[in-house]
Amino acid sequence: ADDQDQPAAGNLQITVSTAITLYGSTATTDQEAALAAQVRASLYKMGASECALIEQTFKGKCSLEQIQVNTRDLSDAQYGGNAMAREGVTAQGNFTYRVTGGK
Image (cartoon, rainbow, N blue to C red; front, side, top):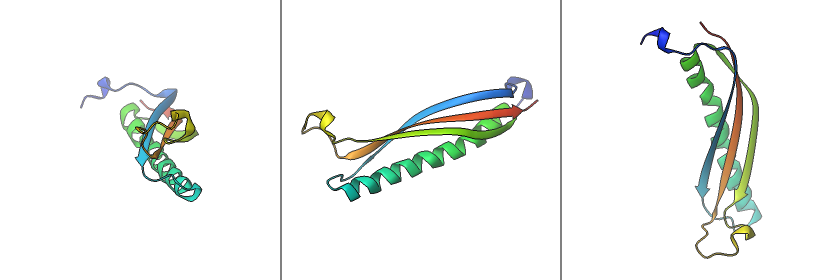
């Protein structure tokens, strides 16, 4: 590919947001905690691997500067006890990266 098609990095901040949902029992505190840990680990792995994609795209050095992760039990009372609510945990992740250097 022609490098002229690639954006230059310079000193760039990038924020990426994503969400993951894992379905499973949250009937006990231990089950909910285990599922929440699993979904957070998945987000952390995604966040760590994002730097490789950023470096490839911007031809610079990427560093992960900040992570914010929030988890929520899908069967929480906020669903009003709706029988349609599935058991599981969803997590929203916000990742902030710094890209330096480049062409």
